[in-house]
Image (tube, rainbow, N blue to C red; front, side, top):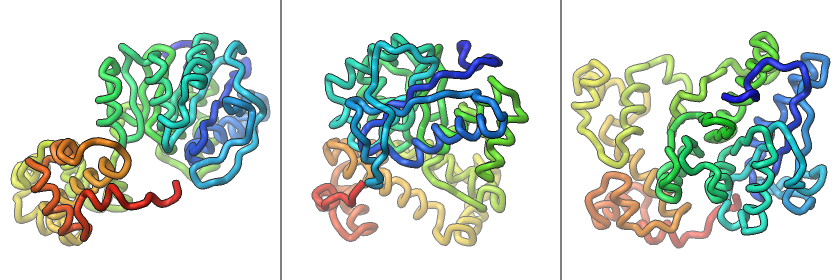
Length: 326
């Protein structure tokens, strides 16, 4: 995965480009492990600069203002260029920014897109012919927008000197993997311990759309069933098929679901698809009919009936509703 993931004694020079409405969680998950590694190692393993496109402070998605070290200098060499973005990335990634990122990527040893930072890299064309990922909510739209990119649902993806992550937790996984490769497993574990984090997940693990918490260890059969549902949002399979895949009868699976999540498997699967449809309606400009097809409904009418029963309003009303502040 390039020299970036090779043992090294010299400090890694990192430039973090932060776009407006970036998730503060993603920024912290990317930047703070570098600080922590330096603290634990008692030596500067990493040096960094946080920049914006014009040198002005950045307002994050929760409206916290972030001071930066200056404007992005595309001609300046760095070992790792990190592009962080989240909400309304297509509005923030204008022609000037894309030109600057394209140039900066040429002058960086490696490039990392965090969350919607993958969209910025996709818009520059540097991901064409490569594997990449983005936040799980946007995977289908990302795949449609960038047909030349091999889109993966993994937590983070490496392809040559280009890396992409799915969000805050996968960004932390990536940084811990980087620290482990460059400074050793002991330092990576010590840094993870500072955050009381014991995940240390690999990049190839899939991004879940449902956080299962204690269900994941208390009832692994329900976990396996839900993960199977996530893989079939666009083409639902019968509950009986899912039950067979996890090694139980349909009746047993129904009992397990009722005890752990309070819904039957069929009701849970329908809710999962409807939540996916609502995200497409609120966060994209896809026609309602296309959103219906992508979430396994045979027609706009079928989606509308189920949507109204679940949320109390038709899909068109959900799309028109004002968004909560990002």
